[in-house]
Each structure stands twice: as C-alpha cells, then as structure tokens.
Length: 229
Image 1: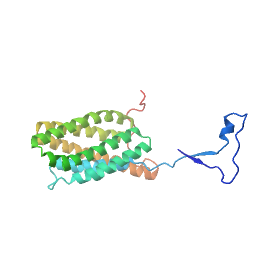
Image 2 (image 1 turned 90 degrees about the vertical axis):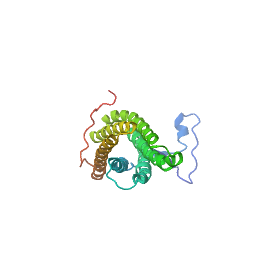
Image 3 (image 1 turned 60 degrees about the vertical axis):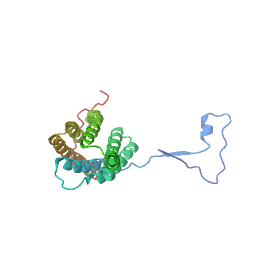
Image 4 (image 1 turned 90 degrees about the horizontal axis):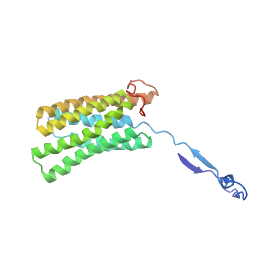
C-alpha cells in the first residue's frame, strides 16, 4: 500500500481543533491510500528456470550430452539469477511458499555454478572428494525439500509432483555420489528429467491460465485443503 499526500497546493493550512479529539489533528492533511496494482505471477518464470536447468544437468548425469558441462552457464543465469528474482517477486506477492522455494533453488543453482567455476579449480578435489562434496550437497537439499514437499500439499497437485520427483532425484543422487555408483547417478538423472517435465508443465499451466484468466491447463486441487489442521 502506498500513502500519498493529496493536500491541495496553495490553500491555507487548516488549524487543529484545540478542544477537539484526534479528528482535529487528522484534519491537517488528507491521506489517500491507493492500492498498488497487482504484478504478474512470477511462478511460471521460476518453474521454467528450474525446469530447464534441471533438465540440462540431468541429461548430463544420464550421459545424453556429449559436450562439456554446458548447464553451468544456465545454472548461473537462468536457473540461478532468473529463479532468484522470481523468488523476490513472490515476497512482493506475500507468497511465503513460492518465495522460499524459488529463492532457495535459485541460490542452489548459483551455488552449483560457483562451486564448479571457482571452488573446484582452486582446490582441485580428487574424484572421491568431488563425489563426497556432491553427496553432502544432495543430502542437505533432501532435508530442505522434504518439508517443502509436505507444505506443497497445500498448493496444488502439479507443484506437489514437482517436489515429489525432486525428492526422489536428490535421494538417488546422494546415494550415487556417496557410493560412487554411476548407475545410481544415472537413475538420479532420469528422475531429474521427470522432475523437469513436471516443472515445465506447471510453468506452462501458470502462463496460459494467467493469460486466459481461467484454468485452461489443470493443475489439480490441493491434496490438503486446510493448512491449519
């Protein structure tokens, strides 16, 4: 809400009422409270940024890509910066779930890029140390994602599927990195591709539903309708 002084310029100031109540003081100026126009929903951007970067990393883990770690640039710019900005706009929307999710995973992708761009070249970890680092990162985000998965029950089924498949992805990656199992890392990559598909669908639904002002693509009702309970 914005507060604006609409006192007419050039008119003599009104004197406060000496023997009156608070109304005499308030009569010194007219305060107009104007509603700030609503912003566009930032969730489709956050979901799209998350989906694309997850897809690129997962395709790399599965072994589909034959090039270098191209996902790192997009992890920094799209999955990181764009998703972090979407999280900031969710704060403006007073959406605590979206703000926490997008801001955290935007920072996650920025952290991944920073780790590979600066930490790895500086400290030159062995393959075992690298796998150990990635395993602990996966465990840390399993913890965060677990309670976000539970709270996604109050959002809608499309978002719930995103967090459910992401939970499976992180668990498989954690097991794969700690055990140095290429097959488990590939399984995590496949789960990540499914996660990306779910996030892309939720993003597409958010875009077209926002454009049409109605539900064109279904996202499903919340699995739990009463967060207080």
